Length: 44
Image (cartoon, rainbow, N blue to C red; front, side, top):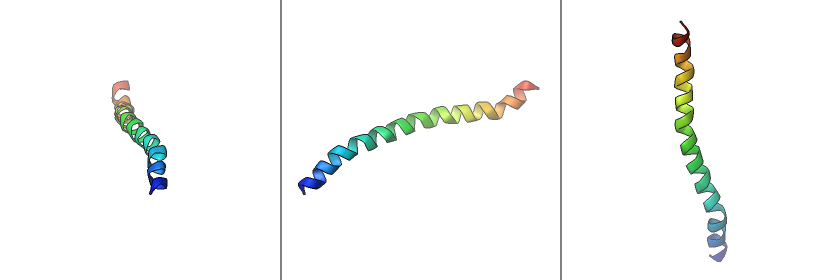
């Protein structure tokens, strides 16, 4: 049981940080994709 607690504390924090950063980047990537799709219309 002590090994599981140690494993969760060591691995859980980096996993949560990774999910948080991926969530933040996702919104910015969606904005970038929309801008790229709108670019041909703006160039006309």
